[in-house]
Image 1 (cartoon, one colour):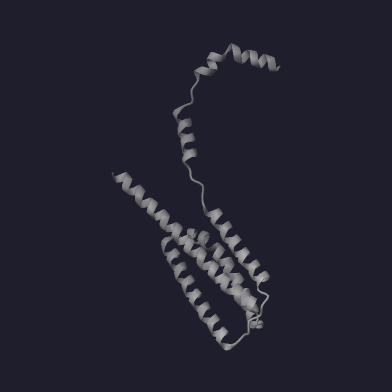
Image 2 (cartoon, helix red, strand yellow):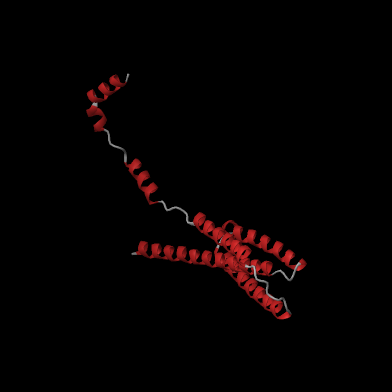
Amino acid sequence: MGDQLEKFIMENREVFDDATPSENVWKGIDNDLSKKRSIWPTVWKVAAMLFMASTIFLMIDRNAEVEEGPYLSEEFNQAEDYYVKLISQRKQEIKAQLTPEQQEQFLVEIDQLDSMYVELKKTYQTNASNDRVMDAMINNLQLRLDILNKQLDILQNIKNQNNENDISIEI
């Protein structure tokens, strides 16, 4: 059967070579080539790896106990207030630039980290002398702030690209 197919193709080669794809086929190929892949999955993977690495570091490397005193607790509260304010500001900046559907996509990881933070805070309230819990809470806040800052940078880059495209279209 393979020999018959090969013979048929060889005898009708001119018919096969004569056909060219339509312009729509080439446009489809061009569109597929020019599509850009979303960077969001990569951003979320990096953020998750940073969080996991910092958590593992805290669990392994924090063997030394630091005395708990009113100064340390006050310092912790100040740091917590500082990060909470910055996180709130960044969330508002993101919400101002996006539709409600986009906000959900952007803030889903932050919401997960928020729930982790609530659990850490409960643990901290029951065992306030645990330095690991305090460090994990601060790392959680820092990670959320880093993610929000990266999201704002990405939004700004997208906005700049759109502005450049608008300018090039006008020219």
